[in-house]
Image 1 (cartoon, rainbow, N blue to C red):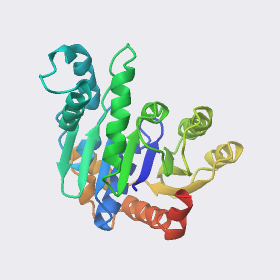
Image 2: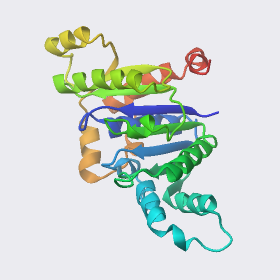
Image 3: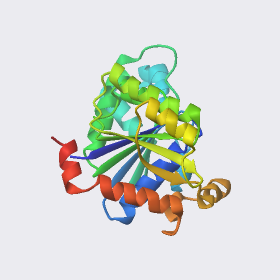
Image 4: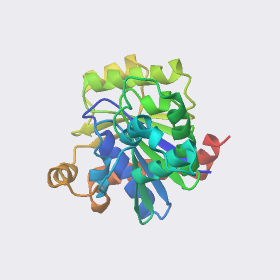
Length: 260
C-alpha cells in the first residue's frame, strides 16, 4: 500500500519546490519507487525534477471525448483510454511523473473521470509513495481522482495572504469531506524568524507551523537555470529542513497512525 503525500498552497508559495524536495529525500533514502503527480494547471514539476512532459492527462481526456468514435477495432473505450493515459507517464529510475494539466473543458465528462480515478488508483498501488503537487483549489482531491491522502502539507510563503490561504484550504478539506489523515503547516522563504505580525495571524487562525523553510539561493538558482532539485547538495538550507521534516514524518509510529 502506497503512502500518499499532497502539497497545497497559493501560487508562488513554493509548492513545487517543496514537492521536489520531498521526492529528493525519498529517492536519496532509497524509499522508492515514487510516483510524482503534477496536479497544478501551471505544470512545472517536471522541470523541477529534470523530466520532460510529453502529454498531460487533461489533453488526453479532451482528445478522447473528441475522438472516441475512432477507437480502434477490438478495443473497449476503457481499454483505449487507459492505453492513452499511459502516454502521459514519464518514466525514470525510481521515479515516474504524471502531469494532469488543465481541465478537460466546460462539459462534465463523468465516464472519463471515473476511468481516470481508476487509473490513478491502480498506478498508486504500484509505488511506495505518491507525491502530488496541487493547485490551490485542490481540484483533483475534491474530484476524488486520487486515493486518500496520508499527509497534506499546507505551505505558505512568509506573508499574510499565504497564511490566510492555507487557513481557507484547511476549511476546504473539511467542507469537501476529503479523506486527509493528517495536515501539516509549513512557512516558506523565512529569513531568520517568522515576523511577529505573521505569528499573530497564525495564532488567530489556530495554525501551528510544523517547520519553517529558509530562503535558499540554491533553490532560486535551480529555477533560474532550470536545473533539477534532485541534484541539490545536502548543504542546502531548504534541503536540510525538508529532510528533517520527512525524517520525522516517516517515523514508524507516525506512519502507523496514518494507516489506522
